[in-house]
Length: 239
Image (tube, rainbow, N blue to C red; front, side, top):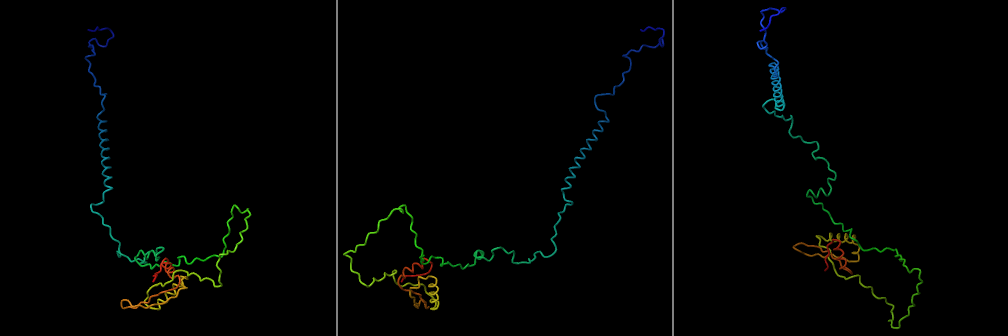
């Protein structure tokens, strides 16, 4: 019980005990407020909507405007147009033998028999003597030729020259006419000068109901000449 003293407010005022006073509600809690929670939910919904809308927008750009496929129309005019130059582009070297052979044409090439070496032509130059290590030495004079007592007596008639080679007759081909055979002889003797010493003749023969004209030549060295003609690619037969 409290004492009532002079100077107090009221003598009948009850003492206020601290445990009898009303406790005020403390709104300052540790968790977020309801307003902040509502604002956060709205922001999250807006973000999700933006992401979903962006995905649909990207897919809509790649998709066609409509469900039907657009057909490409052909240009007006003829489908095939004849070119101004039907022959095509001119290729360098076209018309040469290589192009003709690749196209299946006969190039009609002939072997150049003129390239075969003919009779050797001697040069008038004298061979120069080779210098030797003994050039400074004095050579002895050649021995004097002493006539042999056993040598046969010579006569005034010189010995006959040896033949140039085996003779005989050769055949250079068979032709359809005598004129062709004569022309062939002129061509061969003009190309191969070693045929000039031989004498030629044309012999007609019948074979299979037809008359052929054989070109033949004879003379010294005919067999050797025939061999040289075969090396040059010509037809020649020894008879």
